Image (cartoon, rainbow, N blue to C red):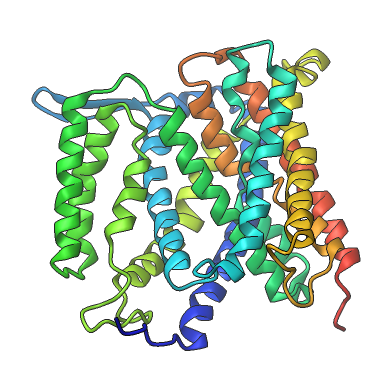
Length: 404
């Protein structure tokens, strides 16, 4: 077999720089939208905000009907596009990016493992007596890459590129872990007919890929009925986006994976602004509104809220930092050039910004029970993410010298 031609630095770093720039700007918008949602949910507009979330929308023809409130159309429908983008980014990074070799992927892989394991155990320690509350164990394991990079962007050009890449890589592994959690633990009663239909459509996608079809539109046309089949199957519909991404080819008709000829890169480039500046802010607005008027100190000290805050604020920084230290100590990984342990600590704190993905997992964890935890989980996510982001900013500000 012939070795793949080496990629020019711009072919690999160009999409990364563009990704970081858009994610940073999108993160700042997410912050503003989260604050707006909190203000609206605690204003005279609160009743209208709730009515908007619960607005019924029905799509169907004949006996085939999909009826959901607006909140679930956003969480199940628009977020499938978000997961499609995650799948595209993951595939590109694994094939040609910073996760394509063990040398560059080992440290973020260990960091993400610790950043999921320790927060989950910490949440479980607070809620192990309540089997319903325990279903939220995965809530503090997530990292919101847009929010985290938005905080990092506040430090300007003084942030080393290697540190941005490390944070991005950890978040990608976190997203992969979230996909596994959703697939393994958040399924409803299964419809085998819909599952067989979904498998048939996946076979069609595999056939298109095998036949060398390079037009993304051909895959997207199959992706729409795939989403419907997965939605009706009882498996969470957003996973259809990840599955679809795995079949979209990285290389074009002439074997090139450059930005202009790669079907995957073209689709990723087209989706990114819509996700960063449209889908995620809409999701944040309808999910981040927490009414704090009726909350008491007893609510704030509830094991669900405390477990999420402890997982994001303490578990994330402890897990990411400790597993990075352990991996370098035993020689399985090395710190990036120019990155020190204080910067790793600040990055570990930023990994505690769960927000978007934590809100999404929370909506799944308590979807079929635990309605009493609806405000408590969002309160814990917002508090843990806000404090983690603020501390991460100040730690990195003191740890990174000002180039001026």
